[in-house]
Length: 135
Image (cartoon, rainbow, N blue to C red):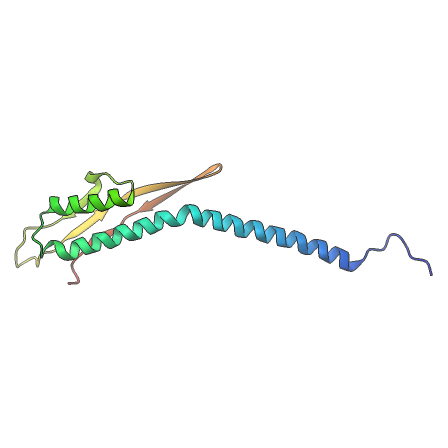
């Protein structure tokens, strides 16, 4: 009964392949978690800003706010959230408050957030919009 020294144990090769596959899978999961950690806050802030804009649009006509007052209110929210928006980038279209236009209010903002990774910068474009047309 002689054993050849060139034969490999099939179980040993499979165990090695499993370790490499697990390591690659772990690296992919960690990279995805890291990317999410860097990107999700920008989207969450945009969601918060969108919500504040929609609330402001719904009540702007009823509260008899001018376009400048609506812009000021939105800018306060922008500063609270730390979103990179200049006051001049907040566009409020608030026609004369007459019965014929039903007090339509449109609020638009365009801004960009750069998310930096090692050797790469992701440029995110955000265009939140709010109006009270459905009221």
